[in-house]
Image 1 (cartoon, rainbow, N blue to C red):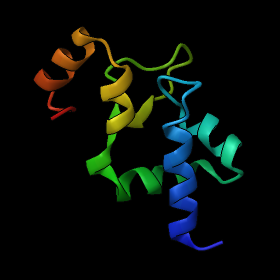
Image 2: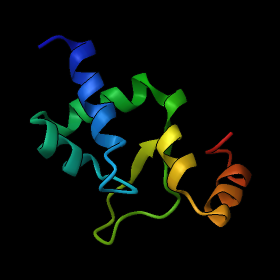
Image 3: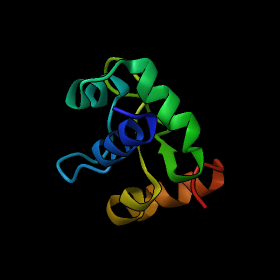
Image 4: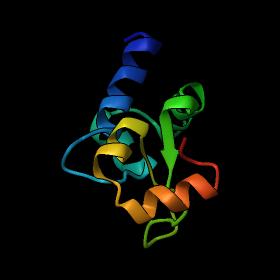
Length: 88
């Protein structure tokens, strides 16, 4: 599978409607790729990815797509994200 195809699968997993936020481990498991592949896709698409200011309960970073965040994020999360420079 080509890199653009893998990135598309990763972005789709980040926007999965069953989840508000995703860990890299969860996305990697769902898509069948390594966590490094997930981090690379996040880096390559940083303009369309949002990172939560709060990690998961086990300390992993949490990510979602900017569009998914705008659909599901609470007004408070959007304001905090804007102040922290994570959401535009």
